Amino acid sequence: MRLYDRFYSKEKDSRDIRPNDLAVQSVKHITKGEALDLGCGEGQDSIFLKQSGFNVTAIDTSKVALDNLLELAKDYNVELDVVHSDIKTFKFDKQYDFVLAEGSIHFLKNDQIKPFIRTLQDNTNVNGVHSLEFFNHKTSKNQVNSMAKWGISTIDTEVLVEYYKGWEILSMKEELQEKNEYSKRGITQLIVKKIT
Image 1 (cartoon, rainbow, N blue to C red):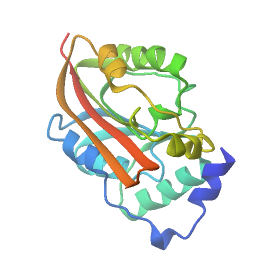
Image 2 (cartoon, helix red, strand yellow):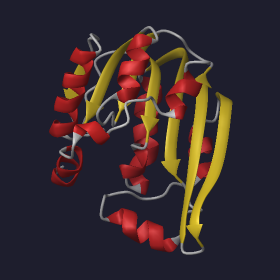
Image 3 (tube, helix red, strand yellow):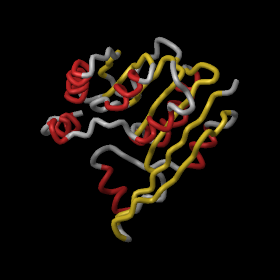
Image 4 (cartoon, helix red, strand yellow):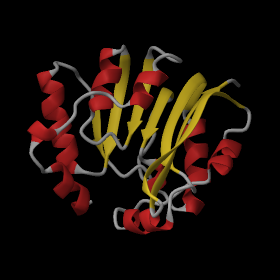
């Protein structure tokens, strides 16, 4: 995706290499196994997961982001399985114990979400964990319109939770980031465990 290649081509010195909060919170619930980082970007979470004891498959649609990730992984002396792919076309070739989708599933259209979640679930081992962060329906209309140019849409939290019926909810947090009454971003973090 050219827009994201341009985004990831900016100066590397300005990048934050600390893992996102969702990844940090997730390793409290699962500590090892096969991990899939969907929409990994430049991979700060992938590197954190590898250092935490996981075997990591990191996928992203931006070749520039993945090149930056490989450079960063070399600096941190970690090996990752890096795949250049859109999350919608990624070919599963193994079962995973942990799936991290921090800021990636809201790139799916509404009719793609349920089958995509089902595919993730089918490729997750029992006791496996999914950690998801996405923009929810509390996001203001102005923000929704602004995010659309990046291919981002909002997801109804209750609908997504329903897709995980039969899974244990380990954590669910919603927050509203508000600059003003016209600029509100609703964000949901959901951590769930496959119990059967």
